[in-house]
Amino acid sequence: MAAWVIRIWEPNPPSGVEALEWILVTSVSTQTVGQIRERRDWYACRWMVEVFHDIEKNGSSEEDRRFETAARMTACLAILSLVAVRIFQLRTALTSQPNEPAKEVASAEEIAVVKKWVQHRGRKRFTVRDFVRGVASLGGFLGRTGDGEPGVRTLWRGYQRLQDLLLGYQMQQKNVGKR
Picture 1 (cartoon, rainbow, N blue to C red):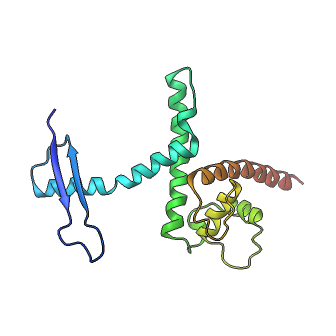
Picture 2: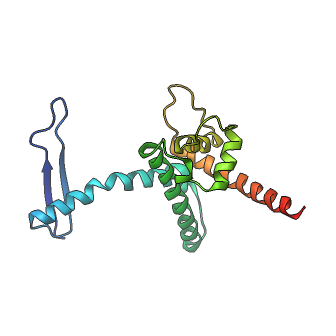
Picture 3: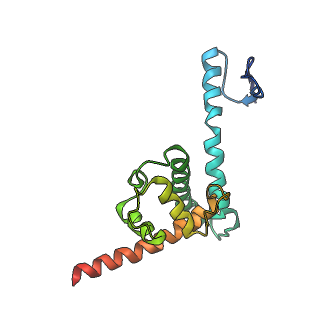
């Protein structure tokens, strides 16, 4: 198998910062500076893949699931992957746009349910941070000083519980409409 080894380093890092150095091995032909830059950019995106796989593995406990057929496993993993993408979106929004309105990451129904859960009474805008932490609180996140931001397991559990609450909310809305 042919392989290309690429070394990428930072010759003059900022003062007090350790220099970046990557040794990349690829099976994709890499012969020009442009191709090297492309491979570098691919690798720079790797953290997103790592976070996604961490969410899949630790959020859904997918490695603990047992199936009798590959078809059943494939179907389950497809659904779990969709939920993992949603959890990843929430985590990313929490760090990249915490002060934006919650409607940027959630439906009106999701916001209504989470607001009710966290007993948000319109004291202020309901932000992305409020929504994501509210979902996490459904999964057991306490949000104490020093707790940091919620982890993927807590978010995963909270998101599952939110789906159950949404179903109840939707059923209630249908019953209200019938009266």
